[in-house]
Amino acid sequence: MNKFIVLFGLLFVSLPDHVFSQFTLVLIEISNPITVNRKEEVVAIRWDDILTKYPALDTANFKIVNILTKKEVPWQLEFKGDKNIQNLLIQLDIAANSSEKFGIQKGKSTPITSKTYGRYVPERKDDFAWENDKIAHRMYGKGLEQSPKEMAYGMDVWVKRTDKLILNERYERGEYHIDHGDGMDYYHVGYTLGSGDIAPYVHDSVYYSKNYRRWKILDNGPLRTTFILDYDDWNVDGMKVRVAKRISIDAGSQLSRVEAQFSIPEKSALPVVIGIAKREEPGVMLLDEQQGLMAYWEPQFGVDGITGVGSVLMTPAIKIKTTNGQILMQTIAKNDNPIIYYTGAAWNKANEITSSKSWFDYIQSFRTRLLNPVRVVLE
Image (cartoon, rainbow, N blue to C red):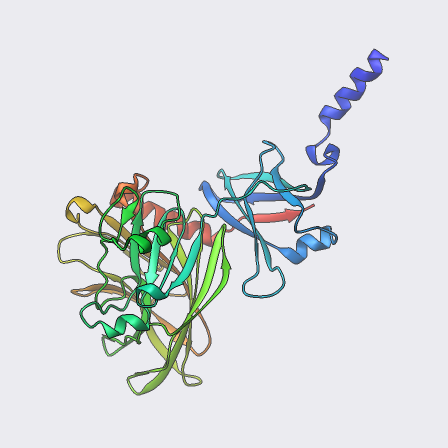
């Protein structure tokens, strides 16, 4: 009897975890094919692929567990504004040239603390603001146009040094320009594209639209927040132009994804630029047309610190140029063919990215990860 127990135990230990785990419904293997560590990355897995493996999966009664560590992994069901689930999102760390296995198991998931959030802010002149556990942004709405002294065009940055969501608290306090220990708003946008907004660029001039007019939230956390900002038509050198911007932010990322879809006359091509506000004092820049990236480490702004701003363009960049007030990366928009890019910021006082080198390394590594996504296999 004792020999039988020992033999059975040895066989049991030698089996893979997913074989003897009675709760595992679907096994997910995620591989990192590059020599770059991926930290806090949000991975999307097609929901239809999961249902193919387990059609009876109960969305109200499952959790995701790392097979090796047995720890639960944060997840989100992504709808993209549809009534049906589109993707399962999970957040994880994967070392360079390695893989991890995760199991979808029956059982109640541990409540997930939301790490992303966005909302329309009618009480502050129609702002639309969004954030994650690293950084926060806002776009200006119609209400700001009634205040000429405050009027601004581009994307604003609210720096953070906390992983907590702070937008509502800051708006409630109304003291954006004071650091209460979690960060502040000291970034100046003015008549620029700010921290990576996009606009037509014709005859060496940026053609700004009015501020956004309509908004729609597609998903709102805990790992990814996605929304659409829609703009009215405006005249660009005699051409009627319209744009809708689909913006999303993932937990753990310094950059937001922007999908800008321009509507212009059929068969037309429209030069557009992504812009970063440039300060009068000397800063440090990384400009790479071939890779379609630009990064800017701003000059010190007194006791408030230093902001790094950067953008990564997924369509070919034509050129990058600097003006007195902006750094501009140019590409071409075609009718209903979206321009996709990533843009965002970092703050040295958050004590994660504290130098121009670390910011430039982050931007370049971000591009490398975009071009070499993880590989997902369902078993």
